[in-house]
Length: 546
Ligand SMILES: [Zn+2]
Image (cartoon, rainbow, N blue to C red; front, side, top):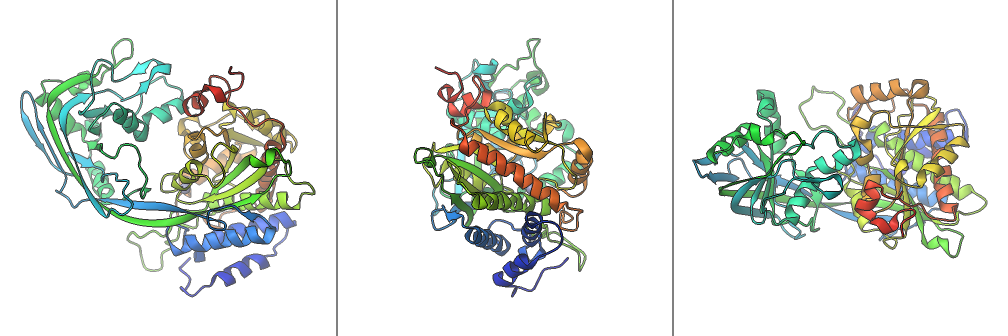
């Protein structure tokens, strides 16, 4: 597969889709047209901020218009998301020194440490320098979770200090809680809340192989993807990574031993340590700002009371674009993203068509949101969920579609997130109506619950569910084969043996789930005492709370 000439017009692409007429029923035919169009080479892998992504936006808008879904963005169907690529300064521009109680250290940029480009909420900023100076504290895994009985900061004062943290989370936490607490974002927020001036996450000395160092050097030149002009809440905090061997030297210079400090005591606790001394850090950054739109369509509800509430169907429209690495002449370089996530968008579009052909409109309104920059870290969904085009608090649920791998005739589905709220029963009933059973998460170690766009809605307190095809009837084999061979590879393309009839069935199921939520007397609620409900929605939002 190669790039099409730059002259391929949107009109030609849309016509190609409308004319696709291969076998099967109408839903299957439309599903195939949507998927194969969006995953064709002309769309160049749909990376947010590129021409290929804009073509995909045009395609979704045209489909919404054609099926009679109303615009519900900020500008027609569109909601522009302000995005930023943040690059580090040139090698050697970042500095890290430590004046320890026992010894002084000068560390080497990109070998001993790697600082992030500063985060800066000024939308006009093109570059920035961030500095930090303070005593050094070690705070274990950096977890602040009173509900789980973990306080990594017990006994130390982190205000104004450079905080050193271990990667990951202690053993024994449930996988979804662990995924939340081991994320660097959560750790930085906890340290920032305690007034830290810097956060350095420690690498493992055992993993410092030449390959690892080479990977770190490549990573150092890649930009971080963030929002332009939004305050992440820790603008003044310098963040980055300290290699395991450099961390060992730093502990020695403070008269301490890292291995001993990182070993849990009999109660499983890691004590915080004030290492003293003074650490000085300096990081440079350079920014490139750009925008890419979310696409938002709506079917207005019929119930005068409930139509001000919204059920959201979301799916990411972007993928990873064109591979710009070294390639042989004529090699395929386009990441078509047929399953990731043209299949999810096709599912959402077909579910939307089902609503538009219903005799009766749903009681609540339904939003169809094709989000951008999922592949950059769930950015488009985070922007929409925290800055919705409908009143905040009016979104009652999110049903997310990401990477349905449509290669087997599914007999069961996995509903990630459903067990946290009353969505469980709604999803189970809708599935039963199609002779499909709900299966428990077969891959808890992958913590898929926090890895797609519904999680952005969860963080805003919205009960959410993310449906994945189950492992029965050949599903496990297609899942494992896809993940090991095609995931984020150029081979994730329409050349895969895609079952478009299965796609149409999956769309029908998601339509039924969204419709059941839209027509229910009560909006979905978090289960009482649920970890995510308590964390993001507060107790008052949970079922059975006073
Ligand atoms: Zn992906």
